[in-house]
Image (tube, rainbow over all chains, first blue to last red):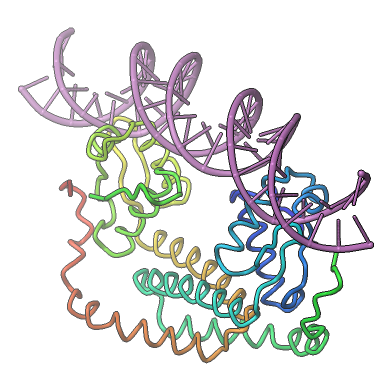
Length: 143
Length: 143
DNA sequence: AATACTGTATTAATCAGCTTAATACAGTTG
DNA sequence: CAACTGTATTAAGCTGATTAATACAGTATT
């Protein structure tokens, strides 16, 4: 389901949080979809179950999933997920823009950079449209 | 000269690198200005000289300062510094924009965010203009 | 020459956070 | 009952950051 990057300096549990939340926001994981169990994902990634659980605790704390004892962990509501992710990213965006401004980068340079990246990504995004979203049905595992 | 943030999860030496390079790019530290010695900055921040030295090594590796044995460490050329900092920030900017795009944030939202932040910062920037830049004279310490 | 600064290097110890390991308990499902 | 699930706990190990102590070499001042 996901791939760990051991060159990444961040802890494993943080990588899991980021990659899983990315899958949700991109529609690969839809609302109420069951995530792999703590133990099976640990086996898949060849890491300790405790590390996966730590990631799941964090995902639940941030509102990306909900867990039911004995049943499993599931993708939370897409509206909540989208709100959370966009808020996080907008905060990060603001921080970078502030620094860029302080470093003397012109407003137009950033504006054009945004336009360039969005036009570059639009073809792929258009080609992808419609391939996601199974309707929020929760009864089939992905992994 | 700078203040450490112990809530910051990044290592101290990285904070020093970022804060000093920020001072340079904002014009607070101008070309050829001598930095505090490894030992005095360590005393100021109540940390170990080795940690400061590690930051200085990194600053030199990235082109922000140059060090002369027996003499001290000095702010490098402003053109080099500006180039380095802006390249770093533009890379960080691109990364965030990519994620924002993938998370479904609209292009216009980012464009307006940039405009908002730049118009908000312009008054202060205007009020500040001219108070910096002592001409690159290297013969007076700042701290 | 002596003193007091500078940067630089090295080695060892300590500390904190992340990860692993082993085990246990509780709830769900078939 | 058996085999799953999430959850909790305790101890050990590992790694990177930091500290500590010391040393050497170059510069500047007196």
